[in-house]
Image 1 (tube, rainbow, N blue to C red):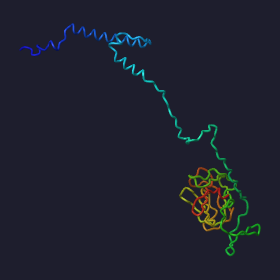
Image 2: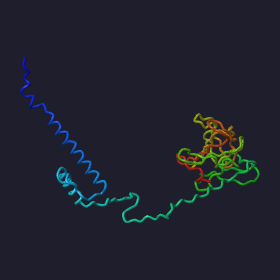
Image 3: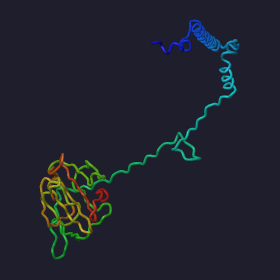
Image 4: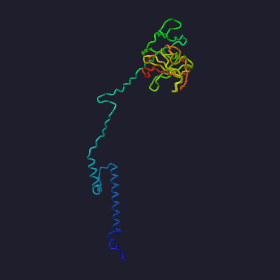
Length: 261
């Protein structure tokens, strides 16, 4: 069968002269582009004939771009920490508040004769050595109202948000005294980590609590005087060393004990 595409082969197939002309045209364009690039790199201000004919469109576009004046970049710095109209003093320093000295604990002689139990008829307590008597009134709340509960003890941890008490460290077996006169409301073991605990109600909404004791020298319901020995220092319950976890409760709220010395 005859090939149906043969009549159209002259239209789709190129001859040798046609291919030669096409290749020469491509080579000419490549050489012209190379010459233009070299002349621009050398800073030459002259233009060749090839620039005026084959690359006239490129020249027009570059001329339009050169006519535009470049603008200098600008930036705006904003400091959010400085208020509008305020000036920054680089020599200023932060004001650090001065630390206030802690009050000096009031020590009590552990060898002093403790006060006797109150007289049920008069409601007073009498000392064994002198005949003086003190009335059993409500516990005051001003500074100096309480006696330092561990004579000779030092603060190992202060009152803060995570520790609502004073930790008073002292050698094991040291004397613990009642911080103020009152009635013992608890004298025994507590499973909350306090170990042997004594709690005293001083009246007028004030109570004191003594934790981690080595023993108990008073019992619930007993009246004790300010400075009377009530227990030895220990480390019962959850404790890492001998100390007293001392709490002050006023009207049902645990307060900083240092406010009352």
